[in-house]
Image (cartoon, rainbow, N blue to C red):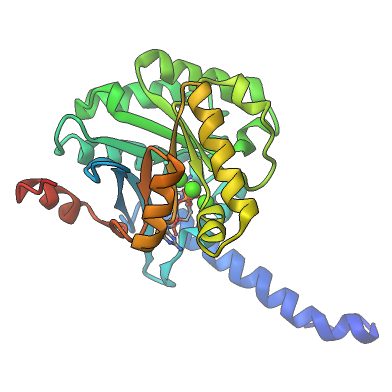
Length: 276
Ligand code: C2E
Ligand code: CA
Ligand code: CA
Ligand code: CA
């Protein structure tokens, strides 16, 4: 780094530079990733809390970069959102998920994460129609997952986009509920079919936190009165599953019932006549 002549400032500059440089390299690779076929989707089961049968799979994108190896979504999704690369990536995710879900039994849905930037694109509605018609997936089998961040800016555009998808027959889940900017007001703004209770509360409740316990209880009661269902995220043990069941959550997702898996493995669960 060049000498900027500052005492303590100078010491930190190389690190900041390395950070920016690393990010720039990642961005260049991310730009090429779609063309190089470097993404795949993994699918994690969502089960009915009472019967434990699979009601849906959540599609979770995986990036195996030729330059950086496996990069976690926690790292590249925020970068994709900042650079708007999430728009073409998200479009690919949506189509791929619809095509793969088409091979599962009719009663099994697919949950697809959608970023705010995608909803602000005027094309989003058409992309949903195209993905459904090209794959032949019934709209009722597609559930779009959004976080409360869609209400932070241009809320009416995002809401319109989701309402158009709902008019087709798709459903919308509110993801990561209770983290971030939670406001109960959001629940009045859109007819969510599902509220996903974040893992932090599941973990808290299982570690004996009365606050977490009370919050899950309240969310379940509120969802019921709003005619919405609840899914508990990140359930890792049989004890947590039992606790969540007793709290009245409708659906459970987490390592205890299945880790995110390649499409072939997800499909095979049904081919092997897997029933419970
Ligand atoms: P998310 O939507 O909240 O997805 C759930 C995350 O929790 C996934 O991490 C999943 O692998 C992880 N998880 C599931 N069960 C358990 C469990 O029992 N314990 C623990 N500790 N973790 C569990 P993943 O796959 O690394 O994805 C991270 C985030 O990246 C997602 O959080 C989502 O916000 C984003 N993401 C992933 N795929 C997509 C995508 O296709 N599009 C968009 N826009 N975002 C995506
Ligand atoms: Ca999600
Ligand atoms: Ca989540
Ligand atoms: Ca999350």
